[in-house]
Image 1 (cartoon, protein in one colour):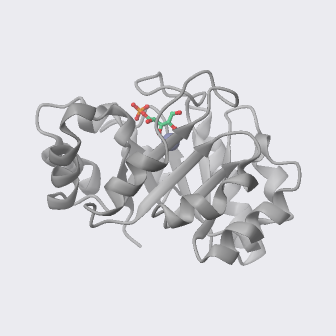
Image 2 (cartoon, protein in one colour):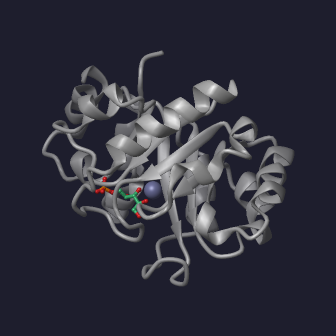
Length: 216
Ligand code: DX5
Ligand code: ZN
């Protein structure tokens, strides 16, 4: 399968949201990545339901919602209603992860678990067959434009082996510091979806940058 590219809206110009979404619609991007931060799980606050609901009405690509919030169970149904097609919860934020995964699946959304840079991939062995995707963080979550942590290459390879051995069909997404230089090595390590914020929205020609990431 060819890899997917998911621009992360966190780095977009929020005064020009309509144009930014239009650019994503016209581009070769596969998904739109949306970062929800609560100021508790991560030291930053982003945006919430009113913004997502507006985006749902104008984006023509699946909405990939990355929840960086504590106790996500409380809000999963609402994120689904606000337009989420894929919902990622953090391993570190879920006490009863198996229950949370099934809560997501029950809404009809695809279920994913995100791992912080310090969290080993083997911790997902017992739920891997129930997941549609694993999100490997290649920065500490909370901010765009941070330095890529290259340890994620070996984590992706290890996770790919776990997925193969288990017969799971989970895809691997990498988020944080992705650029035109590390994109190909990430794909070679088994990554299926590249999330990129600053690399895309910070570039002079975002649509071409997206094409560049697709061609890697
Ligand atoms: C960070 C977010 C990322 C962020 C990536 O906590 O999860 O999705 O937007 O931004 P870049 O690609 O600039 O590192
Ligand atoms: Zn993200």
